[in-house]
Amino acid sequence: MRRYNRVFVVVMDSLGVGEMPDSKEYGDVGVNTMEHISESVDHLEMPNLRKLGMANLCTLKQAEPAEEPLAYYTKLNEKSCGKDTMTGHWEMMGLEGKQPFKTFTDTGFPPELIQELEERTGRKVIGNKSASGTEILDELAEEEIAAGHMIVYTSADSVLQICGNEETFGLDELYRCCEIARDITMKEEWKVGRVIARPYLGKKKGEFKRTSNRHDYALKPFGKTVLDALKEAGLDVISIGKINDIFDGEGITRALKSKSSVHGMEQTIEVAKEDFHGLCFVNLVDFDALWGHRRDPAGYAQEIEKFDRNLGVLMDILKDEDLLIITADHGNDPTYTGTDHTREKVPFFAWSPSMKGHGMLPETDTFAVIGATVADNFETAMPEGTIGTSLLEQLV
Image 1 (cartoon, one colour):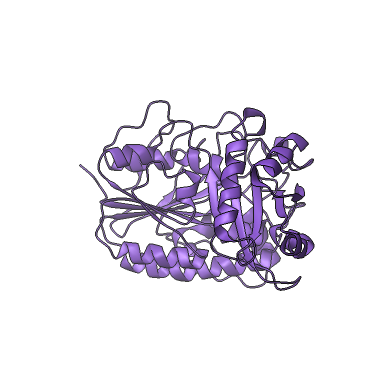
Image 2 (cartoon, helix red, strand yellow):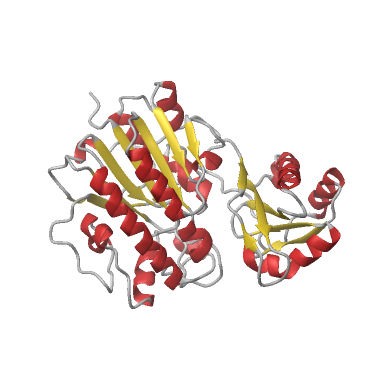
């Protein structure tokens, strides 16, 4: 018998809560996204996260632990190799990644890859280095607009990103070039996790602005996930934000694209007002993309506050038959060196208006407890080859 008719899994993209035992192997020492944001700013108002237990899970300068936190809470360790978006989300839904995705952070993409991309697209590539998305526009967008060239860049993630001005390059042309890049990067030696179309508007340095018409061309998961099991069982699997891209549409029954993390929470609130049975899986990317990578703890703190306000609205409309899970997919400590993700534990909060209990649960050794809990709730078998043990019986 299903305990909850609907489960909402909300991913605060990159909100890590402390280093893992192997973080040093990834170059991450002493990292803690949540605590270091709190230490870096004078103001951080998040009453709803505090009520759920955030100040019980982390030491926060602005908040004392709740005497009676509403949620069950703990820290999840990542079992997979890596610290990227796809690895984290795929593990949540049962897949352990034993090999990290390829990155080209230090050298850019090989000349052979660039040559093939130029020949097949008919456009000269400029850039080809690791860079911030805003900085590379300031550096190269005027040249792209004037000459019709194509900006290609990467980051610390396993990504190949292509910028295109929506007015001069055109969205259709940008998507065409990205589809070609995705085909090229299916070769094993060049296989990146995602090719990302990065459209923007503006005509000169200082006014360039990326638009919400971003599109990710991700690899398909290497096996069936809990999402597939839910869909095959006839349940709704609603994705909000870039979840659909992360799973390349696999296991999704309905996909909603978000313009921002605030918009993503607004969409979640509207979905919560609907009548559906199954999972609503939400990714809120701005924490990571706008503030973590840019090493901006003040901006990150403000984003948490915006999230918290909408979290209160969502909690007010959830029903006794609903379960809310809040988590993250990796860390991105905005006080750390560089611009890369940080390998960290992530938070886990589970709350329902019908819960009688609350409190700290033991730490787990994998994010996959999330998918296992969802599958257990809906009485669907975990796909062959997946990992994870359900926490459902502890959520009373």
